[in-house]
View (cartoon, one colour):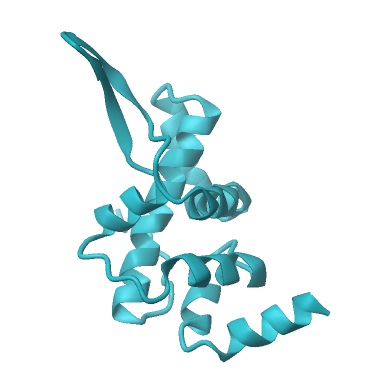
Length: 142
């Protein structure tokens, strides 16, 4: 089937282990990330986030300046993949704590998920840049 072919291609890629080490990244998510990001060079994590459409945009019209909102630009497929991955990552305690903190700051559900997706995008950038596996931050000892 197509799924087994995609799975074989993803497993053959050198970044397979790196991508699969991130919580809530499965074969389909890894395949989408590889197809959208492979062979592209991003100087910073912000460039990758902007490419994915996860950066806030200040809306302006003449002298009217409105607050930051979610960007409608960027790679829609990659943004959707990172968003759904962030939603699935709510089962991970660290991701859930970050999401809950954003909700406590007054952000709505979608805003908090986009913030989590951006954070995971930054982590993904560092993992791809260095070729390292995901390592969860250890809570600071009191």
